[in-house]
Length: 505
Image (cartoon, rainbow, N blue to C red):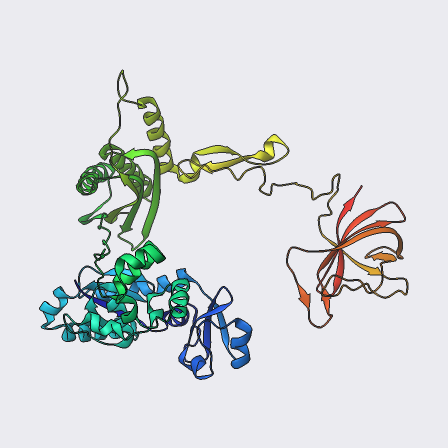
C-alpha cells in the first residue's frame, strides 16, 4: 500500500518548547537513560550527537540545556498536529509522538497528486500548529518513514531501489545492526540480498521481519485512529424553564435522546455530567455517579431532581440550555434479572432517594463512611459524599495524631529552634558525605537558660530530601540526642540551622 508518513523533526525538543516554553533555537538536548535522545540544531552545531552520555555532551557544549525525556509531554503537544492532519485527510495512524501515517491514495486522488497532497498537509500543519513537518511516500510504513526523514516522495514501484543504499542502522535494532556490521553487511540492500530462510534460521523471527522491511516488503496494514463518537446531547429552550413540571418534561425527552445515542454505539452510562446555562449567564455543572447502569428513568430522575434543586435554589432563576455529558461509559452487556423480580429493586429505590436528596440539598447532604488507618475508631472514619469513590487510604497512609518512631513519643506542636555544639562551643556541621567535623557535646534549646550536656547520640542520617547548603557547605541531617537531664530529642540540621523535631519520654 502506498503510504504517506508525516514526520516532525526534533519533536521532543519542539514539544518541550510548546508545553514548557524551553527555547528550541538554543542548544537543547533531551536525554533518556543518561544518553542524548535528540539534540536541537544549535546543539548539533556544537558537536552534540545522539547517543552521547550527559557529561560528554555537556563537555562539548557547556551551556547545553538538558531535559529529561517525557513521552506524555511529547504526545500532548502532538495531538493538535494529528487533529490538523485529520481535518483534511482521513484514516490517520499515530506511529509515535512526532510521526503519523495514512494511506496516500485518498489524499492523492482528492488533491490531484501525491505531491499536491503532501504540500497541502505541510501547509495545514504550519498554519494550524506553527510546526515544521516533512512528508515521505513509499510502499509500506517503514520505507515511507525513511522517505519522510529524507523529504522524498519515492515513485511507485521503486521502494526497493530507494532502500538498498541506506545504512543498515535504519532498521532500528541495535544488537542486530552491530552483529550484521561485524559480518560485513552495511546497507539495507546487502541485508535484503540474503536468503530469507537463512536469516530466519540464523538470526530469528525478529530479524526475518527486519529482512522483509529492508527489501521493501512491508505488508503490515495501517491501523487508523478511531475518533471517539460525540455522545453528549444538548437542548436549547426558546422559553426559559422556570417551573418544576416543565423541567420534568424536558428531562425525560433529553434522557431518551441520550439513551438512544448510547444504544447506537452499544454503550451504557455509569457517570453523568449535567450542565445548564441560566438566563443570567450562569454555568451550572453537577456530576452524578451510579453503581450500575443509568437507564432512561434513572437519567430522567437525576436530571429532574437536579433541575428542581437549581430552580428552587433561587426563585428568579430560569434554565435556557441543558447538556448531558456521559463521562463514564461501559459496553452494555445487559443485566441478568433476579429469580423473583428485578435484581436490586430495593437498593435502586434507596439509591434514587439518596440521589434526589443530593439534587435538592447538594452533594454533601448525603455522606457515607469509609474506614481508614488510625489508632482510635473516631479518627479512622472518613465521610465521603454519596456517589463518590469510596476508596480507603489504607492503614499505611498518614493519619491524624500518628506519632513518629521510635515509640513511645510526645510530639511538639512546633519544632523548637536549637543549636548543637561541639566540645569547643562551635556549631556541629555535617559534610556532603554525612561526616562530622567534631562529635556533638552540648545542646542549647531556645527558651532555656543554658546548654545541656549530651550523654549519648546516634547518627547522622539523611533526611527525606537530600538538601545541600552551598554557602554553609552542610548537608541536611538527622540526629538522635540523649541529654543529661534524661530527655531525648530528634534533632534536624537543615538550612544551616538546628531544630528539635520531637521529644521522647
